[in-house]
Length: 335
Picture 1: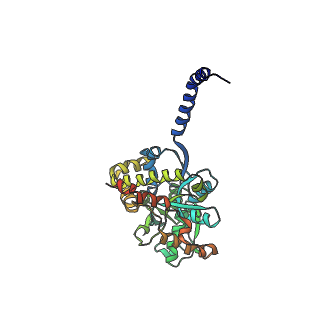
Picture 2: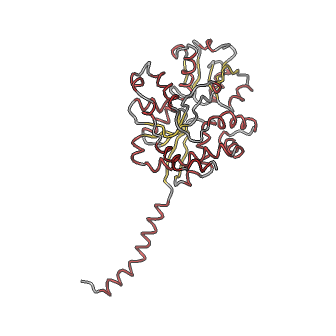
């Protein structure tokens, strides 16, 4: 058995090693958590995400976020379910469709709760009904713009089978296709609305003026990821609502960030983007809209019986937002 003096000597000699191990562990714990997050379009509807990233709000809450552009919500949600991007900022329609297929994908925060689009058409289209039999360009089949077009045109009595929806990719690609008449219609957001007018495209219907609740997009993850990493989701939502607060309370700063991510120099286009999309559609407490989700479910139930049995709350987890709101965290952002 070691004598007391020998044990004391061993403890003294080991002390630097123990301290070194403790420091390394503590340093590792303080390192931000790496997280890949997908977004689906270069448009003002992504502004909250861009602001949170640009201002270091994710880092503030212990996250090292890598933003990845995956054009079209179906692609982003596929990456979400595969675990490649555990959190996405994407069109709600793709999240809902994926959930109905058993993925467990849910919205943990809403984005835009109204349509952000303007319908642009070629000269041959004089009224909405003229779209029957024509080619309508969307970013991706099943994407948010595709779902919005189907929903609104249904209100004009036009069935989705009466229009050929073409997966045409990015907005520049769609505008180019319209100039050659390969497409006769598409949906655009500011500032692309200004660009379209400059090249002679004509706006036919402003969806932003429709008094209809619609879940355009939002922050989504899976119920399985929430169970495994609730604090990661919580920290992400904190940064997200801080980004929303900055956008609403600092118009000039928000416009500078928009200008960078939209890669445009024209101040008029930046102001249009901010005023028509960011200022109008950003919510202080970004709860998803149940009527907006129900509107899409009503559309789906014609082809999918599961949609008829579902309710909007099946596609959301608002516990993190409720927690932040009840704690006073969100109120403090506006004081």
